[in-house]
Length: 123
Image (cartoon, rainbow, N blue to C red; front, side, top):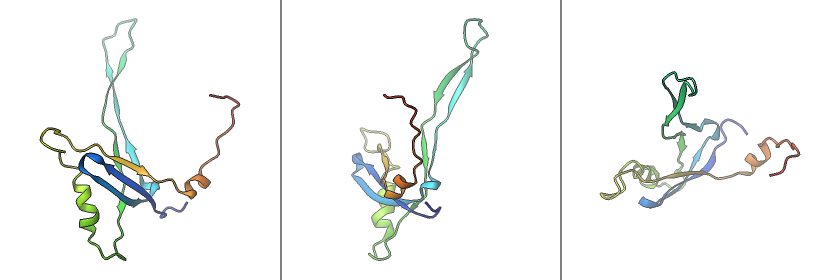
């Protein structure tokens, strides 16, 4: 797969009625999540550090929108829907909507995927 080949993804947020198809470069997609190790007192039968709280995961990706042929406004068709994902759902749900980013499987992803090694183990 070349570094500029775009693939489709779907962004969904049912709470605010967002369902949109977008394009992105899968080689630029990044998911980040961090965790902390917290030191503890030096007691002999206790580990010197323990696994602390994690931060929420973040997804970074550049989205591409093409409305050239349809002559539609990129803002009206795409950007306005993305803006709905950063505002609170309503007064009773004081958080942004739960959203999903679903990459749509393409034939090139299947043919370019490395083959799994047969270890002889069965689940």
